Length: 246
Ligand SMILES: N[C@@H](CCC(=O)N[C@@H](CS)C(=O)NCC(=O)O)C(=O)O
Image 1 (spheres, rainbow, N blue to C red):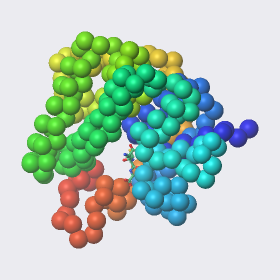
Image 2: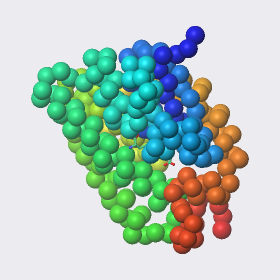
Image 3: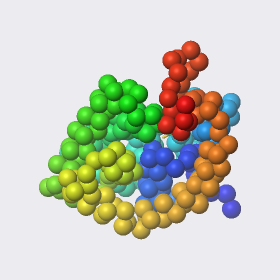
């Protein structure tokens, strides 16, 4: 049987947030791996789906011939399609959109850059960038913990697409060397969400569809593949990548 929706991606937070929503809505979907380390995002077939060459992309029969990119837009589309996880009342809806936009505009980009400058690069290479993104990440984790210290969910009175968008990113806290004990409300919210049956199902689907494939493509990826993946272009100064000991 052919699944009605197709999600193209891998196991990154921006893809995971969409899988959380597909599972919460109990939709029938197929996960298709895009081997980013093999540069599959730059193939003509994939660029027809998303000229921005990024995952996730959702193909939905209700949007014929219009593959949808940008994880926040996909979440809003699914929420409106299903009438779920985005409040109908104006106030809570605006608040949910505010936190969703905040995740898309701040948490994703800032924590993503922090990953590049701390985890992709060898330590001490770019002190200004490493300091800047550390400070930005500290502010964002603090904001999240403060916000959740007096409420169960990020916006409105129920679990929503704002929580789904933020949740996969909140697991970087420890990898970014922040103290979980100093962020108790964030940790409690993270655990509350992790226990949801849909989240557990999503993790299984992601592991089954992506983990082995990502491992295999990473193993074969050359330095050129990594540089392309990290956005390092010919002519840029030499970069000390943490993966390569030079
Ligand atoms: N704002 C986009 C960001 C998507 C994004 O950055 N995707 C990454 C993986 S998480 C990607 O496809 N990178 C491949 C590349 O840039 O070549 C979204 O939220 O969907």
